Amino acid sequence: MKLWSSQRTRWSVIAFATIWMLVVVPLSAIAAPYAAMVMDARSGEVLHAHNADTRLHPASLTKMMTLYVVFEAVENGEIGLDTMVTISQHAASEPPSKLGLRAGQQIRLRHLIRAAAIKSANDAATALAEAIEGSEARFARRMNRTAKAMGMTRTTFKNAHGLTENGHLSTARDMTILGRHVFYDYPEYYNLFSRITADAGVRKVYHTNRALLNSYRGADGIKTGYTRAAGFNLVASAERGGERIIATVFGGNSTASRNAKVAELLDLGFRKAPSRVALHKPRRPAYAGRMQDSAPDGAFGKTVRLATAAAVKRSLRPQMRPSAEPAPVVLASKEDIEQAIMAAQETRLPVEEPKIAKGSATPPLPKINPEPRPADLVLTRTSEPAADPIQEVVTRVSTSGGRNWGINIGRYQSQYEAQKVLLQTALNEMSTLDGSLRKVVRRPTGFDANFMGLSRETADLACRRLAAKQVTCFMIQPGGGA
Image (tube, rainbow, N blue to C red; front, side, top):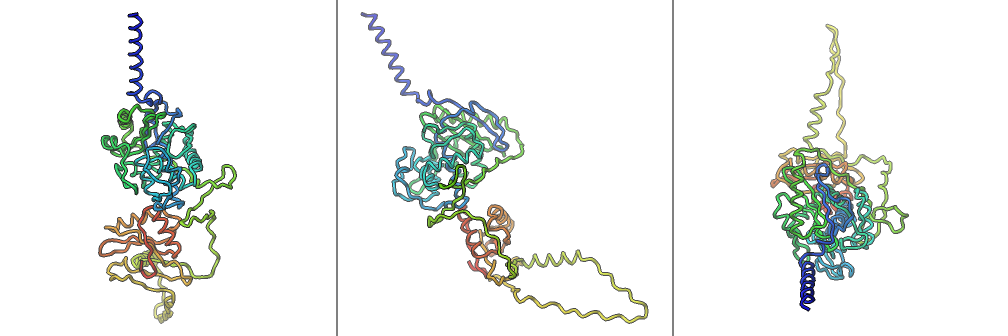
């Protein structure tokens, strides 16, 4: 009897200990496999890999691709950052982590982006997907097309938020590739991933991995993820002395242990990465746009989403009709004209004077009458004194109403800074600004950066496209008015 009682006590202790371990130790620490990768972001060289090609649950690392597709849609004019998005019942019902959106509520797209990037809000991610593609299922198909174009060969997305779903899988290698694309393809948005706090419209949100951002020198992103099936995941990037390392961990046991492992991997990367290496940015995937419901399998095209929600099909730009009309507006500064005249005079070949026999009369020089100034040549001047030659402009006005509009993209402290911004903007917005004149105008409080020689329609389109990229812009009417 005593022996049986002793055995029963022993088994009770063992059972209690087992239950206690299940309570104290997260199930993810037992179930979630570990995988890792370290990459030199500059060259794409892999510095460390462990189970890097094993298909695992990515959890909220998924939102990196969700946000990548949103950035792509904004850049291509499908939607604007200030577009008001109406929250569906489906989005509002997503489980935490969430922003707490209600069905029927309206919120700006930029606030949804902040909530998804910083708080990792699932309701915000679903709302973004529905705003871009109309449904989360269509958005997931677009995510997969983009992933395939990036070379993420072992990734399949089923949703926009990363909650566990059958077949929703990725790898440490593929998520590292995605993190590198986010950094290089959309540097203007990358700062989102390092913000400790942000205004998400309905409330202030806090970063899900403030601990690593605050403790690891040079850390500036990118994305955390956790589900019971995935464990504690993280793709992190850090920069020191011109070197940038990306480290990915799947299956961490806890936030603290995951962060410690990522810090260890980043240290490994900085030790192994060369100080100097040629920069090889990843090739940006081709823009696929929205899948057309009526298109055949594998075919897709771009749909531009307008404020009126009208559907506009993609079409080629029409060719200009042949015309005998005068050439479009030509703009040049007085300084440029004077320099061109001086250069022409310097390069002009000397004219040999005719030899005249001694004693003969000098032949009279032919009378030359200069051609009259063209009637359509107008000298214009800004409202300020033209003490600076930059401020005097010669405009040839087209009889067709022409290209005598412009746009202003800001006022800067120096002429060099204004010229630099003009060049960068021209390269980023070639479709509308190609052929325009970059012009810096000196003002009492700085230097205006202007593009001139545009039609009214082109100036309006350029301003709207730049505004979608968060570039300040306003139109300049003929004669200099805004």
